[in-house]
Amino acid sequence: MIEVEILVEDDADLRLDSFVAENVDEISRSMAGKLISDGLISVDGVLQKSSYRLKCGEVVFVSSAKTPEIELVSQEIPLDIIFEDEDLIVINKQPGLPVHPGPGHPDQTLANAVLYACRDLKGIRNIRPGIVHRLDKDTSGVIVVAKNDKALSHLSNQLKNREVQKTYLCLVKGNLPSFKAMIDAPIARDPYHRQRMAIVENGRESSTKFKVLKRFENFDYVEVKPLTGRTHQIRVHMNSLGNPVAGDSLYNGSVPNLNRQFLHAQTISFVHPSNLNIVEFTADLAEDLTFFLNNIDKE
Image (cartoon, rainbow, N blue to C red; front, side, top):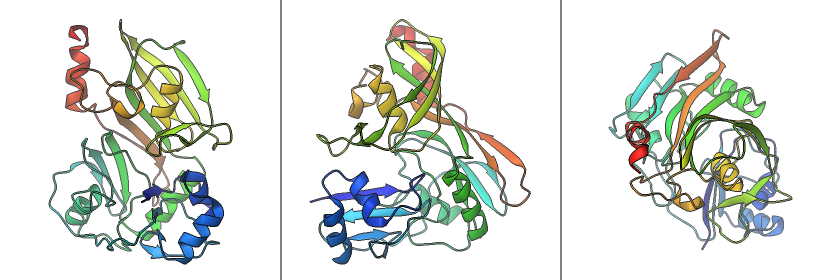
């Protein structure tokens, strides 16, 4: 059985059937069309036609068998709120918290928490209230949620046009071949491992800049700036150099005493949807990662 959920980031304007075929290895475009007509592929919980053009921030759910519809409920979950106004709420997401409901986690997500914390949300759509970008469940750091349709549209357009700047901090195993570089390598679903992404010749354009902040004997502490928004992009690109993100068991990065990938979204900057000023928000490195980094010489 296939169960996949995919957030549309910079793949906006693609047809739904083309998007599914490109992002799910087991499904061809004709098979995607059949699943769509059978009601097994939805966009933000709504059934659409194969020709539907996707919008940035939408979530596509693919299933080979009908599953119960997920209803978003308000849940009191602690949130580290960095900033909030009438348009936005900026959160320092804790590790282990999924961004929105999906297979295996119908609730206890950031979306559930935002619904509880923001009683003035407007224009909520299904299971994704104002969420225009996401972080992996075990990635910590800054994430922005729009509180109304105007802000949602404004931020989605900036993401689509690659005008949102993001900076991540990560620790990689071993020492990188250079202290500063750009990785240009296309990414698609791994043809041999459905849960992974991989460097694939006919994959989608993917670019990542990095620079080493500090070198250790067995690790490099790195600042990373993804210029595109592919699934698992940083994790795949660093692994492709032979330096997987430390703690990332999915991409060969397992290390003792680190229970998740050492990956943290440090900053995000964009144009504010109302005052049109450039704003930047920063989330301090998570406590578990700080502890590991401070004790790295003992590893």
